[in-house]
Length: 131
Ligand SMILES: [Zn+2]
View 1 (cartoon, rainbow, N blue to C red):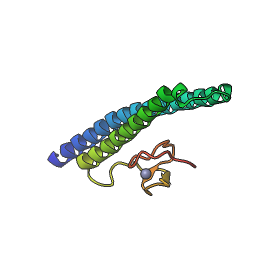
View 2 (view 1 turned 180 degrees about the vertical axis):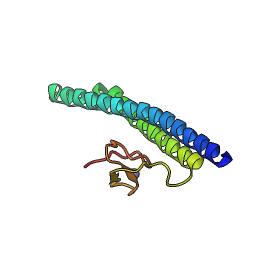
View 3 (view 1 turned 60 degrees about the horizontal axis):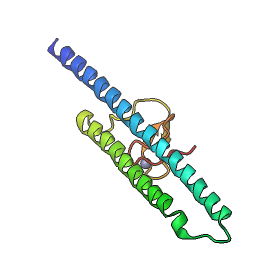
View 4 (view 1 turned 30 degrees about the horizontal axis):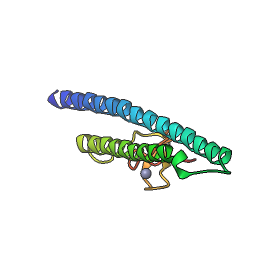
């Protein structure tokens, strides 16, 4: 009976860790997607500015946008690290090999880690999953 309760508690703890990690990491993934969209808009602005001012273009016209893009890329790197950290924590709490539930998997083209088939980003390295 003690063994049963122990397993039950362990099972519930696993679900809690997985659920909160899933919520956390999808929050980070949304933030990454937003940053990528913002970068795309800035890139478009830069392109238009260069074109419209092609006869008297100066780099000063886009220097603010350039540094904003750099900041956003840095922020994306941080977010990816946080996702990586979540996966790492989960592994430490639940034991290696426990992060990916059974089911169809897709392997990361960057690091080779298995991810659930519907993943958009690698659980391990945060790279975008392309299928
Ligand atoms: Zn990866």
